[in-house]
Image (cartoon, rainbow, N blue to C red; front, side):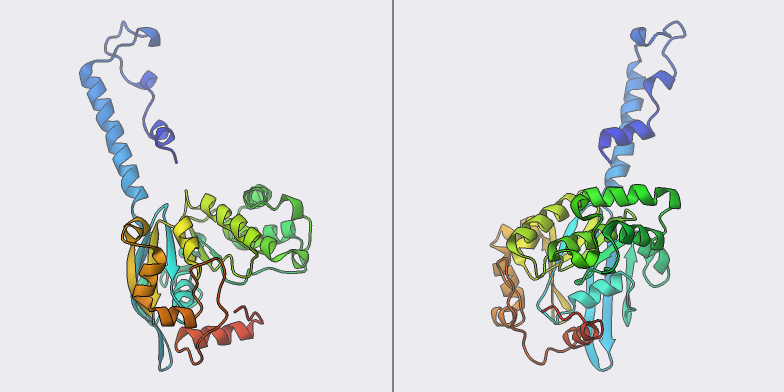
Length: 333
């Protein structure tokens, strides 16, 4: 919310405040005293500072998060924060624990240890409140291919608790926001990969969440589609907390203000993009914390493409996630 609009909503207009003299009733003759002006200005500064403090608070707070699959540990002691109105890039090679961490944050699976709070609500104790505040786009968009785009979005709006009277308005809003006007009446199964990703973003935004979590939103797209989706995501970061998981390093540099690098289930680096790139490129810092051989063999690229080679025998999250992907029939590499 712009600061001027915020102050207008929270401060009384001058016409409703006591005048300096009963005789000075006309707005054109109104001349407040210096004390009154100082008081009014102090009040405005207090409201603005409170608003700035709220804007800068941690929307997502992850502390000592761990997840084990039997004897295999996928995530171990992961801690990081994401502030309101900030886009955070979540980087790591295949099998590092990225997807597992994101699924725990969204409430899709429980953690073995640790805590996660979203807007002050605990993911494990207040799961429904957390889900109301999160929009999630997994690697494979959760579409019903036999449904038309607009009908699908209306269905998702009902599932996410959008009021009946507001469903049509919410649908029209995300259709416009995600550039789906040309395909709103088409079946989801007849859409290109790029448009399916747009519909996936639309379903994540339908209930106007404060947090948006995107798991490799540009995977499998051609260069033109990648640019379109990137620009769309950029426009969404201004008013939301965004966590973007990707293997494409320039994508993080272009979209995000903060980066978290995870390797072998642990946080290797958490810092601002500006601080990181002031000492070198994001790619150089990534390779320094992850290792060049590990990055190349486990599918991370510094360009707009993605390597297909994945080291055999990846432990932890790699094995568990691969099994989950096989079960739902989507084996994107």
